[in-house]
Length: 611
Image 1: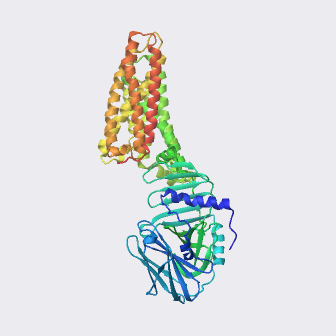
Image 2: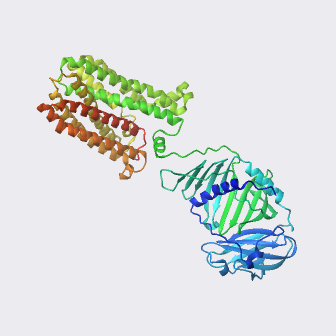
């Protein structure tokens, strides 16, 4: 046999393999050393050691000596729940169907004598709860060929692997837990179980997530050294024989059986080794614990990366995985600017047409502010388009007209067309603002600009599309009147001299803001009811989380608006000394809050609604 690797490395490997088992809650029954009466049941170097399960009982068979003729058959019984203690078990032994008498040689030990030539079918039947039948076939030739060289070669070959996958079944066959391990040497693995538990190990960091949990837990772990295998222990193997041939996943293999006594804990192994010294399957039976491994994907590429935390998980839900997610994130950020521009321009037109007292000296600076918002909306929309192309096909897609067409599509084409037409109408009409025709054109342009937000929103694909689109349009118009009007109110306050504060303008906007808030709230509730599909949509997924954030920010801004309406505005009218500085601060805070609402809304548009 080859010499064992260093104790420290093996301890690290053992810890690396023990961790998934602990996380899965698989309690391995402790196995102490056999008592004096049981000593003969455990195999030595000249014996043959085979093992199998009889229900919930591991049956270890020792043939002594491993030769033809008269021999002793020793049974070691390792029960697990629900089987009773080993001392209470009453096994029945047959060899090629012939009953063989057993005598007790200890609590877990039974012994018999039989004449064998090779190839016999040995069956052990255990009745009662947790029992079953273990069927073992002796090698066709006794003594069999030594398996030490093959075991050495297989261990060396498997320890030289950098990557592989293990399909693992743990526990008695009728209640086995299935898991899949992905190994990436020297210190990365991932374990997924059928029960929904996942463990990822990267270096000394361990990440775990249970079934139903959305986010990962993380903790520090001991160093590990991969690859590591269930048979690769410090204790030397005994009774290493080639016991037969078989096929695993269509590959011809030679089966090697052996036994390891690890500090008084008996462990039986059976490995299936192909012509390239790769282990295709490995069974380990010990202490009421059964592990059956199947190995595949040898040195095939595998990516094991640290899982995302809550922030990264949420970001991926919003924009997707890199690299497409990075392009999409850029497009979403630019679209936030586009939405700000649309609402500021449309709301600015409404403010100029319905709220402002039409002082001529303020028309040009206010018109320039609205013009800048309209141009921002159009320019940002144009810039977002190539970023959407990149999200579909990366940088190569920028040179492919077909990808540009896919990125545009009918909804995006409508968005761009309506926004361009509405923005140009607003820009063209603003120089003549307050003349009836110019005001009408600017108002129409504002309505078209707001309508450009509908084709790519959730309302266009809702079950009740007409109702959803109507509610969304009312919601957006009210939001534009509130946000854009607030921006121009702040500009008006700055333009007016301290001795001529715009008290009438402030009062008029306060009434408009109250109406807008009511519409925003009512229409928002209706839209949310259509998109959420029920109260559960608020807590299930990113859409509900972002919507709750939006509601919280809107509520905060509404409280600030109420403070302005019922405290600051009356103070301005009575000429309080600190009223106008308070008003300017309040307007800035309210505008910043509404800008945050617009940004959150732009994110919400890119998330799939639960309905």
